[in-house]
Amino acid sequence: MNIFGLSDVGRVRPNNEDHCRFEKLGDGQAIFVVCDGMGGARAGQIASEIASDVFIEQLRGYVREKMTIRYMESVLQNAVSFANYDTYKMANSEPQYHGMGTTLVGGIYHNGQVILANIGDSRAYLFDGGELRQLTRDHSFVEELVQRGEITQEQARSHPRKNIITRAMGPDRRPKADVYPFTMEPGQKLLLCSDGLSNMLEQAQMEEILTGTDVETVCKNLICAANENGGTDNITVLVLYA
Image (cartoon, rainbow, N blue to C red; front, top):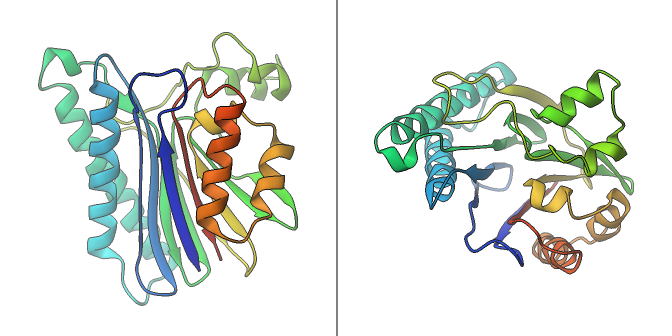
């Protein structure tokens, strides 16, 4: 198992409000997270850093050599709760931080067993046999329109309100995280990313790049391609190769 992640400011934004962290805990375990902050001034950057740092610290403290999926889910939910509490507390501490928040997608890899938590519109995908499949569901205004059949996925990509998210870390005291447990087989890749990647690249472009076997090179090539397509937002990618 190999894991790597990168974050890039892109070609338009003055600051990088994305943040990613990952730690490999031996050959068969890893913890990881991608956050995309929002808010005025540096508030989004602070929110994403707080949430990702606390999330990883909590996971690190409770990941064990032997774990059931039920235990992993409990650890994950606690990590989300602590990360949100610290982000929420900061958002209410100073006037300039009011309303700040962040997406979060992250989780645990344990000897082929994976469990993810998701809040917001950062995404997780599984790449298998040359095909990319989205694992998480966006918490966004346009995703709700898609689910109701009012617009298509293709229309959602260019919808004028595509950046409105309906769930985030920070603004609410107890946001609900969606949880996704599954098993990864050898040769599969897990991709986590902020919308700075998913909005910039077509799925076919992502699939072509993900055929590479070196996770660091794959991450760099994904970011490079997103920038070549405009880089209108911060871009963060994380790839785990089972």
